Amino acid sequence: MDQSLFRLVDQEQDSFQRKWTLVNGPVIIGAGPSGLATAACLREQGVPFVVLERAECIASLWQKRTYDRLKLHLPKQFCQLPKLPFPEDFPEYPTRKQFIEYLESYAKHFDINPKFNECVQSARYDETSGFWRVKTIVTSGSNKIELEYICRWLVVATGENAERVVPDIQGLAEFGGEVIHACEYKSGEKFQGQKVLVVGCGNSGMEVSLDLCNYNASPSMVVRSSVHVLPREVYGKSTFELVVLMMKWLPLWLVDKLMLVLAWLVLGNVEKYGLKRPSMGPLELKNTKGKTPVLDIGALKKIKSGDINVVPAIKRFSYRQVELVNGEKLDIDSVVLATGYRSNVPSWLQEGEFFGENGYPKAPFPHGWKGNGGLYAVGFTRRGLSGASSDAMRTAQDIGKLWKDETKQHKKITIAGHRQCISQF
Figure 1 (cartoon, rainbow, N blue to C red):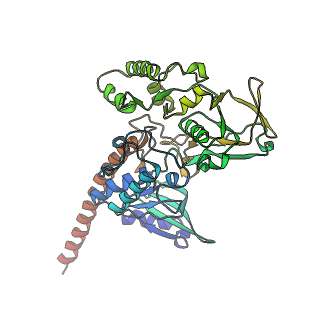
Figure 2: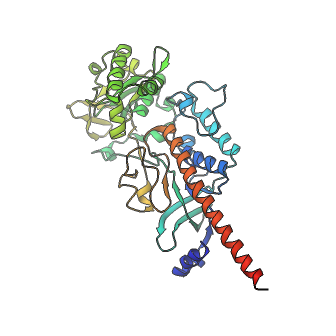
Figure 3: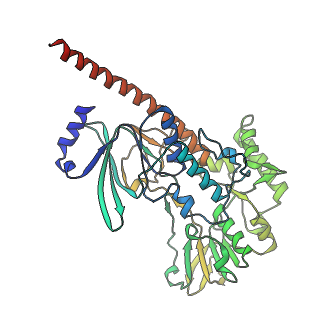
């Protein structure tokens, strides 16, 4: 290990000018739920690690880019991270604030101390030495410092929601009113009395539209393509829990059919309100395309009552107005882009085998957690927090075994070298 490191340093003399650190264990990039779960599992195995985070807090998506009314969409038992359940007094669907509290107590419990304000510029594998080289920029006030970490294992835990997606819509620059992404939306309070166009009909689009209604705004929600809307609960039982239960005994296609029958019984025919269902079932669509069904928490009632106006795709914007593909024109005051997020991995990871151009592992679930040369991915399963937890446990177990084997080998070499020295006297 030491000889490989010397070769690595010899290759590039500027390494001496750059402040660099050799990490005796993995570097984990990202201090969201995926990174914290991996760190906790490694801590349990006694494996040292370094967590790098570009923001100044853990779980920055949850702390800075979520709206006030947000609650977990799934029951808490499906959202807890490994080795530490939610407090018993938490409700079945914890609030955003409660989830952040849980994550902070989780980090404290496992003594996870990320290096904050460290933005990864690049990470590449050095074939000659067998080490990863992770270059970061640390921002401290107006100062910027370049650092480099050298490690055997690299865990990518930046997740599926690292960067917001802002579509290029004709005329949006000429609109003249307020345009924000859903990650900047906090509550409908400042939109009272306004006509607001919500672009997107996923869970965020539905929930933002509902929140706007509750603050006496008039939302119009753009539904460009088909969408599966399912009840969050079916006769008091969590829909997700029912799916998990049925999947133990029944094939996926049959579970899909049963879910659509239950959705029709509970919600009625949603197509007549402009919410066309995809031809593919909700679970098959999630597994193949990664498109999550909407779990209704009250928006559908507002759609049925006409408080939320469902409209087709946008043709173009003009000053304080939007023209739709059906020729209809709407006067609007503000726009909320509930257009989702994407992975940012291709912008910094210099590797083309394991991750695809879309920033997700190329191998389908459940094989997308481990690449070559000590590269791992946690939180890219499109299966929420339970998928991230599963990745974290596998990754930590694998690294733990390799780290222990390597440490034993290193000790043997050291002891053998020590004996050789003694025998010469």
